Image 1 (tube, rainbow, N blue to C red):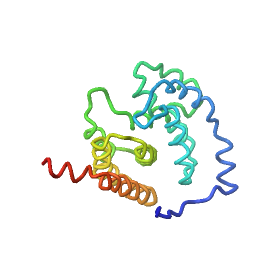
Image 2: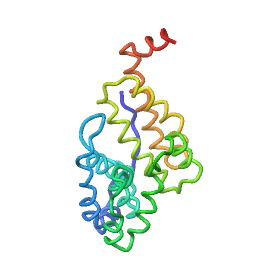
Image 3: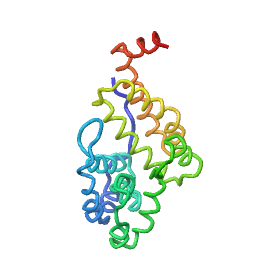
Length: 200
């Protein structure tokens, strides 16, 4: 049975705030990610839009946060992307790029150092964005067929992302816990965990 999580409704005030945010130019840039495929199927453009939806689902209507969510993988997955295309969009573009860079893994940086950096130095918005990003990835994990990848990703989420989530948004923390439990139950039901124990 899925965990029930209380989240704010889209009331009139939030709707009006959302209506005033010009997202289309950022979405247009994000379409550059359509050619980037994912382990679970689909592509990175869809993941950006999914992350945006998760933030709105949790009641986040901050314009910089939402714009950054739509392009949060752009600079990492397309390293030679012309940043001027972002800066030309609007007067929030510099703040958007700054936030995107906070959640962008640097070339040659280990995943653990990257995530530790967000835990130790990330802004509140960067931490919220990382949680929404990970919720999207954990949901997609249900379509991944490599048990070792699932186990490694669950462990990484438990060790690095839960400390971020419990700091910034307890309801996101609850959902991540639920997703870890269901993914690990799949590994248990499939016999993978028993096999790895026997092999150790």
